[in-house]
Image (cartoon, rainbow over all chains, first blue to last red; front, top):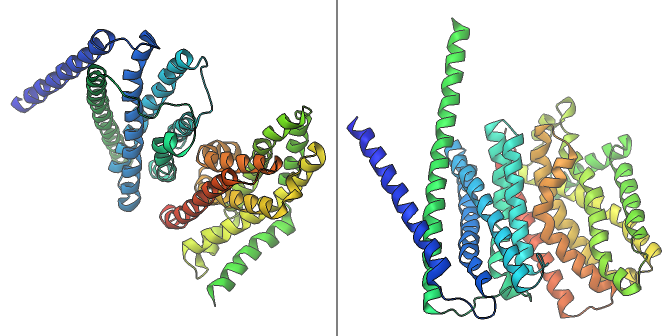
Length: 229
Length: 225
């Protein structure tokens, strides 16, 4: 009982930290950071865009690493990490494309351009989506894990392309623009805030997947026992 | 038996069974030709614009028709326990992958022998003015598509889902290959064989090497059941 109370207390503390960090990020992005001269208020999207873009890449790296671990260990626990990273990463990747599109409309006058960074980010999103679709359509757990793992491992090749796209290929996407100290501080705060928030989401989803599997195993055992009786 | 001979017989087995049954190649070549005709009908525009769009259209035609062959690679092994018999053949799983990959490369090459000349005839694009360069691009593109397609085709064949899903599954992974091959083909159509062309060919080469290596390494892990 005392152990359960401790867990609930810890959960509440984590929730409080996440809410405080997100609120601080929001306030800093909306009012504390100075307004950019050329783009005006629209530039503030950047604080969210960069944060979710970083998390989209991190999610894919986690998905690829846990897929590799699954391949070698054949333990579904690793696939649960991959599954959770797939869902959270897909959300971040979608938000990256969405916020980037709003920013592009304001900066370049178009919602989309086949710039190398945008193209490689779209490919990353498409690989995330493929894994997502497979998880919904293949029901045998190990078969599903094998297919998504191979996709994730092959898709890892796209990661350096996304990161280095602005340096390796000519395009219109900004490389790493200079910022005022307050802008930089706001960006760092947003990155930290979103990372903690999505980290908590990731951990929650992982424990939920684990519980689902335990429940399924329990159901199978009960059914087996019933059939014996 | 030498490994090259064993590989040769595995490739022959697939080619002979396709020759006897004619299950996929005729449909694939026909689909490739039809898609080429349809795409070319949309290219009745000024020459510069036509050549700019040609690369992507040619490679999409090859990809979508080629998926039929990629899907069939392992599906044909499921009937009458052929797969179990195949596993009894005294070679490692990596060599089975290499043999299937070689057959897919041959299928895509055959498809390109139909699609590319058709594009040249229908759009007057000077694609074959530099035959050596075109063959080089086609070969690297085929290797990139076949390596991923063979690996995923093997996995997907166990799930009893259609070729359309395989197309959806493979496309995001081979998109960089298709983009690089399309750009290299476009530059060939515009007769601009310079540093930019070599940059796209270099990218194609990197993808081909990495995907084939990944395919060989992963295949053993993926087919054990």
